[in-house]
Length: 349
Image 1: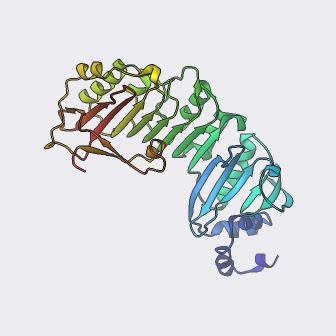
Image 2: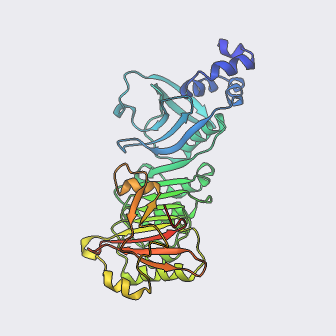
Image 3: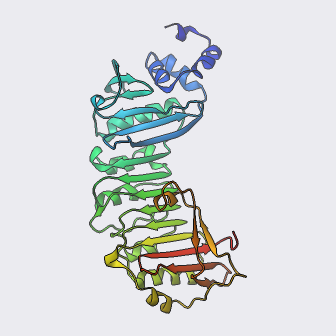
């Protein structure tokens, strides 16, 4: 191959024009070529182990800053993918042979669920472009072992975790979050969780937490949380838990929390008057804070489709001022189906 004979400087210029698929294929040619590809500096903006748009397979997504189209490494059936023509070849990486099929900006290796086999290839790709995994979006039925995934070195340092699926055993949720080492920026659980979940500090310590069906969340989870933004839907929490949460904040020193929103199904609505009577708060004073609170969590789009932020009207809210001067506001919807707690790090927006 002529590219192998080019000086490193020339190869570096040419390689910047190539897509990830071409670069990976080049790296398979020889050890020397692999080192040449690896020597370059690539600006990678997306590095996710994720689900495809139809949620029928796991895939690895990688995007260069100078490319408008992401690169996908798909662990699913190529027959289900809309690609006109495949180029096929086999290649062995660390003793594991893969049957590659090349499509437009994509590489397919066939349907598989073995975490070790998938991440052997993902790790190769990450090392080739000298980058690390940014986040994961998974469905347990596509994976041989949640624990093996969570303890894999590439996953240990991710900052974003999204859990999909029709159902997830409590033990698997615990295995996933209990084995992660790095502090999380986002922890989203879309899948209904079956069974009682032990305390998982890494989940409720993420900067942003969103649990779509939160019936499994107990008092211990909430009181042990250390998140900045919390959104719980379809909650079973009772008034005493919410009251305890506010009182714990009021008597504590937590300065991280900004917003907690809890939504309830009609059959489990909460008593607005009971909460107001149990909390020694004050009505809104326009001299102390704005009427509306700006919620800047990225999960805002889960409440209002496409929203990047939300304005929460706190005119009827109940205010609490801590000894350190931090102000909090509690709002309970008239229908008893929403509990909102805002902390005013910036009193006037």
